Image (tube, rainbow, N blue to C red; front, side, top):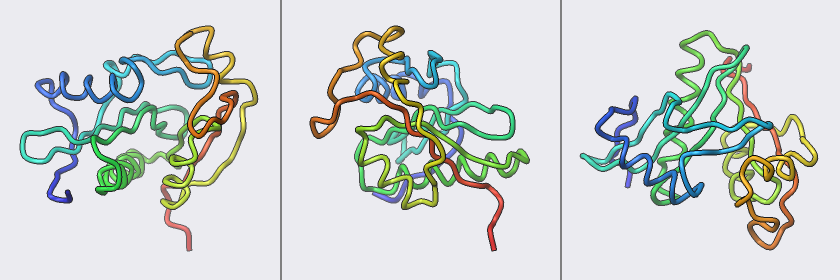
Length: 164
């Protein structure tokens, strides 16, 4: 992998993007900070290899930042997630937004490692947020990756301004 292009999603790619979300999240809906998001309605960046969508990053803009709502790659470790996150950071900076931020769950050690290696820092813990999310999406499991009980949301962010 590595011969892919990152750009805004095109309408014809919706089915492929939806398939990635189905595999990763069980459908087009995710719950974050007590809000249910329909990924089909959010601006989306894609990584494409030829005609094949190999990754997608759905985001929204809030007061002062760009929130990464979903980041999925068809195969981890190929640079797709890194390229999509870099594109989101560039998108935020070009729009004059000060930060890129996101939420992951307390069990997602792979994501914590991935995001921290790319300059993101843990800035908050919302205790019980996943427990509350189950009220909106009951299929969220009680136990997550590596047998870790799933309860909390972790907030990570990075500045879009070069620090020096």
